[in-house]
Image 1 (cartoon, rainbow, N blue to C red):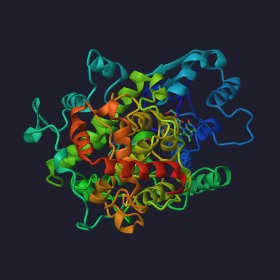
Image 2 (cartoon, rainbow, N blue to C red):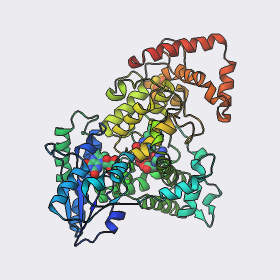
Image 3 (cartoon, protein in one colour):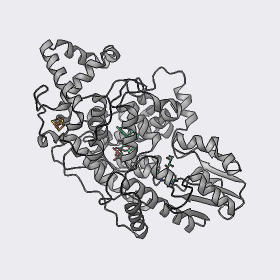
Image 4 (cartoon, protein in one colour):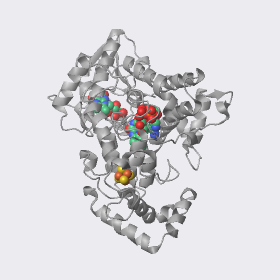
Length: 509
Ligand code: FAD
Ligand code: DLZ
Ligand code: SF4
């Protein structure tokens, strides 16, 4: 008899481990365990989502005729690791092989490879995760011999491989990338359609009670929990996005609003990452919307690029570079994460709005993550490990393979530019242009050196000036350095005085 361990982010019927099993003779094991639920302080909604989706998935496997051993969370169990549950199961059932689809995190992958066969006393076979469009080997082959691993070129390969938005070997519309049309601020028109609200069933309710009782000290609240916990709900979420928001996704992809937490974003990352949706089906649905004239090409291309481009690319980078990647600190940062990343208490309206969204919904959209909370961590020089841990904890879609390259590489530029050709540092004027936050803020976005001036402004120039050695020769930064050089010494001194003050009082902003 064989058994397959199915993890909390492997909730797909197409899973490679399930394909190796015989429904009638083999077993599927699934387990809610303390080690996975506590290795970072996951947001309460993330734990609720995973436990509930796992329970629903186990039920759907049983309904399809599988034999499933499900271990619900039990704080009193002496062993709280996945291997403890497997060992206990193997004591009752004689199995000759454990089969697992490779997991998404280096930490667990190493344990499965290095110590589980001995701990369990039977072979452990790890199979590739075929839910991704690009395998680890294929990515390594693409990366080999390249000086720069630019997402754009990888993305074109994925377009060719999938045939998405292609006419023969050429991109539809004559262009691979329509990003230049995707930078509009939002001024209230068109109205943002509401997302579907899901009714909790008994499984959701009992999991929400469990999380409230056992994980109350974890960040965030459960009040607004509305993540799909079944494939049916995930398909509804996808359908609602494709039919009501995709058409505006491109134009307003980078826009932010004080009172609009989701804008025109899809909200499908949680479902993609835990396995309720596959990348290919999502992209095919978007492509079909374009073919049916329901959404313009800039929106559909932009959306598909996020998935077969960025999502696959960051996964490739992760597995190509781990474990050294997690240790990188290319800008030698050493500052602690200010307490408001955990409490949300800050006077900076943009940061406060993103924290609120994060704690209320375990969500923030890409530009909030990159250009607000991420940008602030970059320009203030937060230690990469601290900010990486924060992003892994607070978002319902966060798993190491996708969070780490986004944070350490894209946001913190700690990988020396492997992932991004220049740091995404920005002053308050970018935030002012792309949002209405500054209207709600007690800081003044138009000034840099006064007592009440926007912290992002002088901190941005502090970043530019303190990292001149690294970036002055970067062609994409030359204009910025020329502007800095043109400033009077008095202005530079005033910026330095203001930013030094802010850095010394970082916790009080
Ligand atoms: P949409 O904006 O509607 O985009 C559609 C889909 O594209 C997403 O669902 C996602 O699957 C994919 N996507 C978009 N951008 C990226 C990207 N940069 N990397 C990978 N996939 C992308 N995404 C995660 O799924 N998990 C994470 O842990 C995560 N951590 C991040 C940390 C930081 C610092 C930053 C800047 C970005 C991070 N992202 C992460 C990427 C992105 O912010 C989220 O995928 C997106 O906000 C999810 O919301 P959505 O489903 O509404 O996405
Ligand atoms: C994130 C998570 C949580 C909170 N809990 C569980 C769990 O109890 N059981 C489980 O199998 N998986 C869980 N997960 C997802 C795992 O942490 C994830 O599979 C690894 O991080 C690899 O991506
Ligand atoms: Fe953020 Fe500065 Fe605008 Fe305030 S003024 S919302 S701190 S960018």
